[in-house]
Image (spheres, rainbow, N blue to C red):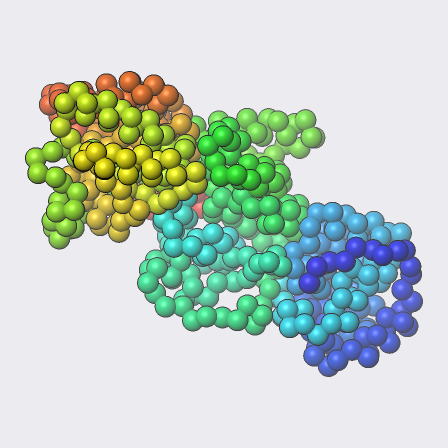
Length: 508
């Protein structure tokens, strides 16, 4: 149901509304009474089995037009998250003309005049719980770095705490609770079977005085404004994992329209309490945005750098055998690049550097592992051109974890010349596997590489990438030194990361 604009100012006499409520169908009256009942306890209103009595008590309670209570009543009665402007409009109308008039025109008339099933979904107000928003992971089987963080942290939070995992029920924005089966499929086993649930039978979840954690990136305009209103008015303590500000700082490399969605998402997070940034580099970006909020009279959320793990998984013998058969070409040393295929990852520069070395006579093979991103056509075309010239380069859209760890361990080195990263998981994973890395000499990548095992280069200089790659392919002493440095790095685990992030966003 779309909340309706005021067609014109008119007062709603209580008797007129009472007559329309009485004339509504039994299932509409039952839905209205259920929602009014959900409002009664959090607002401290006595319950009633008569919807007209319950409406009168609600109207009396809302007479002062408190924004937070207006938001709650709008969400519960409409079963969809209200936008910021809607809350403000209805709050002002309530102060001018009373709650019955304001809510009648906005939500009650649409509810009473239609029998659409979507309008009749039950509503559940939840208080004093921790809600973890994993919407994107619940809707996709992709394994980007962000989704990897969501799943690794989420499964540990599920093991150690008792959060409520939620997603968005679109297109009418509303929260829904994931079942245990659904949470298992999202966080632990993508092959697990989760029974399909009719969205019209799933209760709409309304957080009130809870703790809300956004565990992934929200860069979608349709979700940003309702989230903005929720963070501002629901009384929820709120926090998010801060991955990066790439759509703003490197907007030329991201998908069309993403910058707008990301900016709208940041506007929502301006009312959050804390952002747990995945690196010091990411924290610097978020702190820059936070300082800009001073121009709007807002302080914004506190931030902290809680670094992602550098934890490797020992590959199984079958995975090593399969990876060797699939990726190792004779006696050619293997150069690996892991990451989605999008301009920010700078893969065209790496292919150019490789071609410079192949033309120079250097013998090695290359493998790119990662899902297709946006604006990846030029990269895919260049791969095809090189393969047509019999260059030893291959492209894999994705690998199971065991096979990926095997490829890390079999590689001479990895190359990750990204132009901007919130962290750079492939850098940390390669070093944790004991495999040297060539990566960018700034931001989070330099932050990770400072611990040893990496050559840092200017990613905007193709020849610098080529020179570093040539050194690692030909200088055995250098390769041995960097391998030893990588192997000596202290391990940081996903358990540590999940514990520290939960403590910062929830406990402290």
